[in-house]
Amino acid sequence: MTVPEEPPVMPTADAAEDAAPGRAPGVVRAGFWVLLAAGVVGIIGGSLFFALREEWARDQVKRMPDLNLADQTQAAIGLSWWLVLGAAMFLSFFLLLGYQALRGVRKARTLLLVIAVFASIFEYALGRVTIYGQLSSLLTLVGIGLFYVRGARRFYPSPDR
Image (tube, rainbow, N blue to C red; front, top):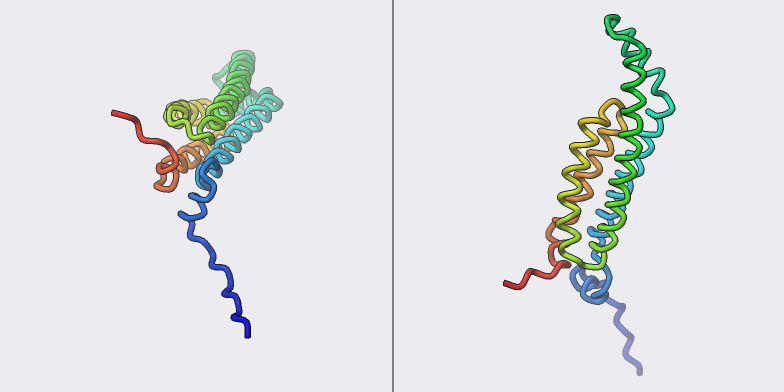
């Protein structure tokens, strides 16, 4: 008579992370993708503002008739370039530093925190002319927060002191 085999037991989350030591935890990977989404949303918002900047200038003059249309158009042109180039710069930082953070580089995670603070300030200060800037700022804060939850902190080696 043969003894029936027991069904395999599902490993815990900690055991699954230990089984794949070179792979970043799910929360770190999610943080990386959320940061990339924040950068893409920022670029979409900047591109839409770039395409609709003359309309924005006309709306500003309609709301405040004492403004000059030519001045508002020039301001919209400058703002649109700032939004597109700034969002592209932050997306590239998120991509480069996020990739290093996925590999377990603690310094990259710290630099991501600094860049995320600047990106949130940039997107909220300049990008708030559209909802995309505010959404990008929110996604940036959520994404960087995922790098600092308990499951992610275990992934990064503690500094030698």
